[in-house]
Image 1 (cartoon, rainbow, N blue to C red):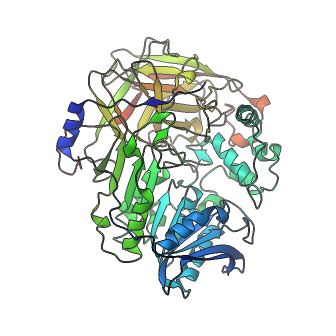
Image 2 (image 1 turned 180 degrees about the vertical axis):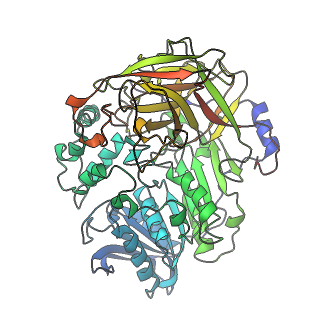
Image 3 (image 1 turned 60 degrees about the vertical axis):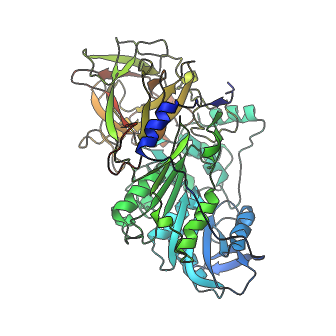
Amino acid sequence: MRIKTAVFPVVAAALLAARAAAAVAQAPDPGKYSSAIHEVVEVRGQKVAMRDGIRLSVDIYRPDAAGPFPAILSITPYDNVGSRESGRWWARRGYVMVVADDRGRFDSEGEWDPFGAKHKSDGYDLVEWIAKQPWSSGPVGMVGGSYGGWTQWWTASAAPPSLKAIVPQVAPPDAFENIPYQNGVLSGWLLDWAAGMSGRTAQTVDQGPYNGWTRRRVRDLMHTPYIEINRVRGMLDSPWFETWFRANLSTHEYWQAIAYQGRENYAKITVPALNISGWFDVNHPGTPMNYVGMRDYGATPEARRPRLIIGPWIHGVNRRVVGGVDFGPEAVIDLEGYKVRWFDRFLKGIDNGVEKDPPVYLFVMGPNRWYGEKDWPLPQTQWTKYHLDSKGHANSLKGDGVLATAVPSREGFDTYVYDPAHPTRDPFSDFPNHNGHIDGPVDARISEIGDDVLVYSTPPLGEEVEVTGPIEAKLYAATSARDTDWMVRLVDVRPDGYAALLTEGVLRARSRDPENEGRFRSDRLSTIEPNRVYEYTIRFWKGTGNVFQKGHRIRIEISSSYYPIYLRNLNTGADNLALVTESEAVVATQKIYHGGKYPSHIVLPVIPRSTTAAGSGR
């Protein structure tokens, strides 16, 4: 299915006026920042010794002037040749840009492991080496996206004295919150990344034509046991791959060595962070989690004043058209300029007022406008329960599922069958340039047509409803198996039927914490007794910023698979899903209860459209 480009309708003038009464819409504005006035001197392939004697390869881009200058470090596993234009861009503006190949990748010595414990000390050693160079004025900042966001947080948690500021962009969180496990569920899209990370240089699966690649990917990820997938794909130089799947609890020393989140780790970080992500970013959870963690536990006053920018973007940020939807001209901002302004303040000491900017900038879809906010989650949020209800047949688009703020007057349940041999397919497999996860607000109806999906919708809305913030669902559910997965998705349904997928949450049943309202627990597994009703609290891996407009409907989908975004749970109850074979798979009958003593619901962060409450930022 090909998705035609669509445009989110512009909300009514009265709606914008109500929002404006609370606050003026405001986009991140870089204002004045360092101009491109320098010629550039380049040194490539310089070797820098780490504390254990392993030498990392760095490329250096510095202004062709007397100096010294502040420096910016980027550590990447993706080949530093690709950073040449960025390095020159920063050097022209009075910064020395140092781009390092990760340990074991490309021209750097050592053994490569994406989650190797040495990444923290390597970052520390590189920062302090830079600070001692004759062209360096001492202060060092860091930039980078995706894995380059990880390298920043790993380095910052080691607290090198010369590190003064970071800009982690689309940075993933610790393992189990996103990759390779998301609330206990194995991420299928990560395995495509793992294939490219095999060996010293970038390997790839033989993709061929686009449609051929789609079929190849779907076939590859059906292979069991999952621990063999990299080998089956021909990615042989990746001994760390099996470690990911054997170490299936967060307490394993492998994951603990590289962890950077949590109160103890945040309390080691001394530098201010400019956190950047998108509503459809594949690694979204790290960004708001790090904002809150640093705000609450950072080691210094500066560290406890982080900044947060979330646009309407996928993993590749600063785009106007995402998932076939045009978010308008405001979606694209001078993001690179804002980064320069950030470093001008914290590395060059220029008093440019960046600290007086709102700490949070959010792009709200629907009105397609930026807003400056006081905090995250928004202080004015009204946490609103939307309850599931039906007459017992909520299966598919043709079902009778209802979503309402009123508590259902009846008690009941809906039933569906999850067969691992025939998983619910995600709507992205036929989408051009699919990045492996949610590619924007694409039409979800392809996933809603089967009886293996429960669908609950509000009636057409009589007024606009803004939902901006983190989302959580509470399900009362039973399975005939000893383990399974629960998946909940939030959808904005337009009057023409287009079902725009906004966000979703997943939870492996055995990862529920029986002592904490069924919330996800990463350090041990619980027991699931077949056909017993349990309470599951599913924290969505990302929030949203969206206005459900008048005439639209708010919809919730529930299933037990969403393939190949997530690898199938074979429902065996095994402690380690990665070691299970297809022959052991179990077909599960699933029941979602609602009403009475089992009030299944989703909690949406509803934002009052005309609030003038103190601290609202609107």
